[in-house]
Image (cartoon, rainbow, N blue to C red; front, side, top):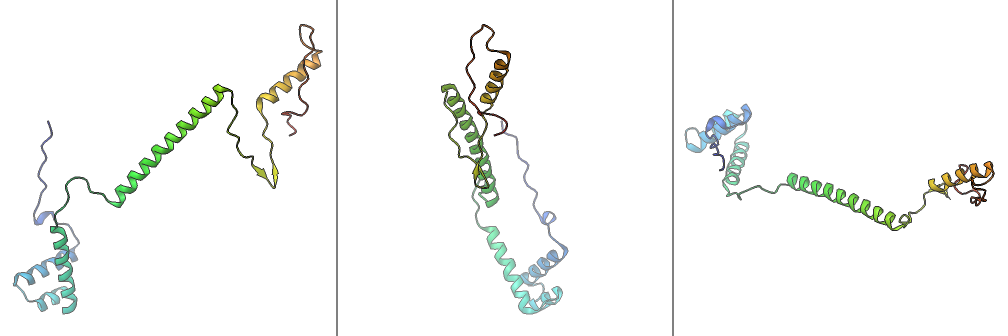
Length: 168
């Protein structure tokens, strides 16, 4: 069951605006109702008669716009559109990261390497990226060779010279 909505309060007490705006609205309404003349209203506001007519026209135009029928429901505003687009962008970025993770996992499970990224260059020279596994393997094989071969007396294969060495 939907909660009952309180009706919005209406009336002159709910009108918001500065003291100057309230004074201008009161003078324009008095002039439009015939209680005072337009020259008297202009004098009350401290403006010329032509400026008074500009203000009156602006006030009447604002009332006309306010009386136009409104669409029901949530209105599309530029701010809401921006918020919706930002939320969609965040969701798409999350989906992209998820898909990239799934692709990496699938490639690893199939034994495929990376996607073949372009090598970053530093001052025109391409940097060689050391593969951690090769470095560990070279270190282990070096330790075994220094010990004199495998524990069962078999000869251990030689590590590739220079592969994954820290000097690269």
